[in-house]
Image (cartoon, rainbow, N blue to C red; front, top):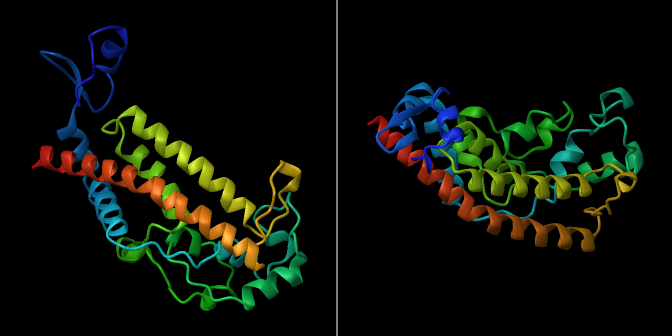
Length: 230
């Protein structure tokens, strides 16, 4: 976790939280970071390890976004500036005509009351490590979340890779949503059609493959921190 060099940038960080001076320059103070964020590091490790251990489930088709507006009034629609591509009735019909099996707690918590019982899973924060899987778009975007929570123990290159992945995944998340995103210059992925489902699964699989080495690197950062604390 040593910073290269002893120039102005390193000296500036010497006064920051979770850094310390060493004979070789300025380094990340892994022990202090692990002590201050012990619960976060353990949670990150559990979720990352659990996700890596499971096969990708590729049959959700992004229906979490649709479940967030099921039977919603216009005032309850989260992205009110974007019209629903199929209208309210058409959106409700898609939700009611598909199997919903969302495993991500931070997507599920935005489901409308009428959509909650339609979800085959009822994820909570306490079951997060047991349920998250690599095909989930939100779990993949969370690589960036974990990288930020583990900073500065995460190398900048890894942090940027996680950010770029999250950005790309979010674009698919919105393209496959019930919203008409053409005003944003995006082509919708019509997941209510066989062609749209196939396109979604292809992208979902590619994102899962991109995320795997990032998750392994983040897991290694967790292990390094926990070893330092021990």
